[in-house]
Amino acid sequence: MAERNVVVVGATGAVGRTMLSILEARNFPVGELRLMASARSAGQKVSTRWGEIEVEDLVDANPAGMDIALFSAGGARSKEHAPRFVEEGVLVVDNSSAFRMDPDVPLVVAQVNDHAAADHQGIIANPNCTTMVLMMAAGPLHRTHRIRRMVATTYQSVSGSGMAGMEGLADEAAALIKDRDALAKGGWVDPSEGLYERPIGFNVLPMAGTVTEHGYTDEEWKLVNETRKILDAPDIAVEPTCVRVPVMVGHGIAASIFFDRPLDAATARAALGDAPGVELWEDKTPTPLDTAGVDNVLVGRVRGTIGEDGGINLWAVGDNLRKGAALNAVQIAELL
Ligand code: A2P
Image 1 (cartoon, rainbow, N blue to C red):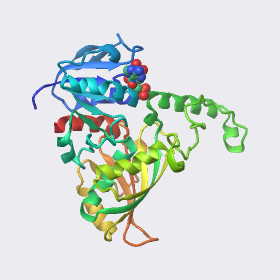
Image 2: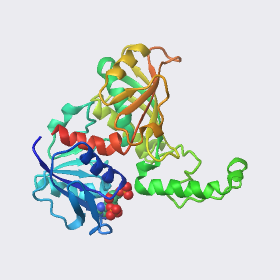
Image 3: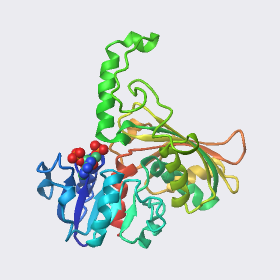
Image 4: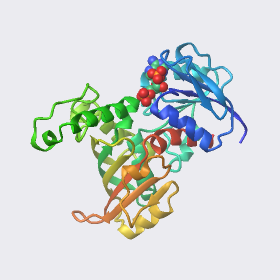
C-alpha cells in the first residue's frame, strides 16, 4: 500500500490513543502523521514510531496535504470540522455518531459490509461500539438466513464514556470499597460526581446513554438504526436495552436472534467459526476481561432458542476501544 499522510483527531483520548497504537502495530504505511485535540492538549509531545509529534489545536489546524483523518473527538467536533477536512481533499473516517445515519455516508463494519465503503463522498462513519461488536456475530448469520427480529441486551464498559469513564469507575470503586459492609447491608455514601445518573462502582445501570424517544436511550436507538443500515435490512425489528456495567474495557451483548427461516445452533456455530474477525469460544465463556487489548470479537454460549423455535441465543463481547472503535477505523482506512 502506498504511504498515506494521516491525522488523528482526538489523539489524546481513549480511542485516539488506541488508534495510534493500532496504526503502529499494523504497520500502517504512514507518510506524515499529525495529532490534533483541544487547546488544552496543544503543544503536548507524543512519542510515536514516526517520531515525537506535537499535538495541534484542532480549531486552527489546517489539514491541507493530509490524506486520511481518523476523527474521535466527539460529535460536535466532527460536525464542525469534518466538512472542512473533506474540502481539503482529506478522507474522514469518523468515529462519532454525527454522520452515521446520513444517507450519503457509508456506515461500515470492516469484515461485515466492506462493500459499502466504496460509495463514499469524503466521509465514512464508524458504527457505535456496541452495535459493531454485535454486527460481527450477527452479520455472518444474516448473510445466509436473513435476520427478522432481535432482542439485544448490552453490558457496556465505562471506556465507552472515554477517559473520564475509566477514571470515574476507578475513583468510585476505591471510595465505595472503604466501607465494604455498607455495600452489602446498605448505608453506602454515593461517591459519584455526575459521570452517570447513578453510581457505577459495584453497580449496574440499566440505562446507558440519554433517554430520547419512547423512553429509549440514544445508545438503544443506535443499536436499532445502525443495525438496519449496516445489514441493509430496514425491516429488522430490534428490541434493545443498553446497560452500563463496572468494567473498564469490553462491551458484551446477549442477543436472541430470529430469522426468515429456522437456524440451528450447529449451523450457527459453523458460520461463526468461519467468520473473519470472530473467535468462537466453546470450552470457556468469553468475558470482557478476555477482550481487553484483543482485536477479535469473542462469541460464546451459542444456543438454539427454547421459547420460539428456530432462533439463536448468543453472547458476543469485544474490546470497544479496538474493534468497537479504533481498529475498525484503521481497517476502513486500509480498505481504501
Ligand atoms: P483533550 O484531551 O485535549 O480534551 P476522551 O473522550 O477519551 O476523553 O477523548 C476525547 C478526545 O477528544 C480527546 O482527545 C480530547 O482532547 C478531544 N476533544 C474534546 N473536546 C475537544 C475540542 N473542543 N476540540 C478538539 N478536541 C477535543
